[in-house]
Amino acid sequence: MQANLFEDTADPGFHEDHVLVDASLREFPRAFVRAECVQLLNALLETTPWQQDTLRIAGREIAVPRLQCWMGDPDSRYGYSGIQLEPVAWSDAVLRVRRQIHRLSGAEFNSVLLNYYRNGQDSVAWHADDEAELGPNPVIASVSFGAERALQLRHKTRQDLPRYKLLLRDGSLLLMGNTLQDKWMHQIPKVKGLIDPRVNLTFRTIY
Ligand SMILES: O=C(O)CCC(=O)C(=O)O
Ligand SMILES: [Mn+2]
Image (cartoon, rainbow, N blue to C red):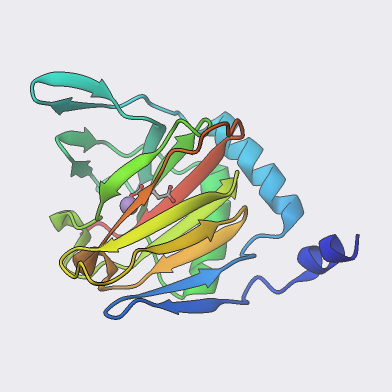
């Protein structure tokens, strides 16, 4: 009871910095209070036009292991691994999330990639968000609702550095610093037996 009370009244601006040699992450573990998290997860699940995208690998069409939606200002077209994403218009739920992210980060974002991990079998493989449209050193704001999942990071060239692991909790914001995409890769691995859904929003600026 006491722990919940603390969580519900905790300051959304509370944050912790993780320093990874040549990059940094700023974690706001309680960017959204618990009551908002439940409302926002449901609203995002219900009002987002989720799509099953496919990747072409060695001439074969492979379903991406999660559902996605690219949302943003009309001119924020985005593509990766051969997928071209046309933005859909901002939904009320996502605008509500964006307002809080602008407040906490002091940065502005004109687009967002939403990922819906239906259960532990959905995942995202090792990658860096380093596409040209994002500019040379993009700051990306990653917001999570629903099931807690691990974010793993590994350095692109320094094999001597250990992997870094962070648990992305319900209602958290992770600001990925400006050198992270250049120096590090990240992934969300599959989790056996997990049945709970998770929605992640990565707010970006497209130039
Ligand atoms: O789900 C996450 O926390 C990360 C998603 C991600 O890395 C991406 O969409 O680029
Ligand atoms: Mn990413």
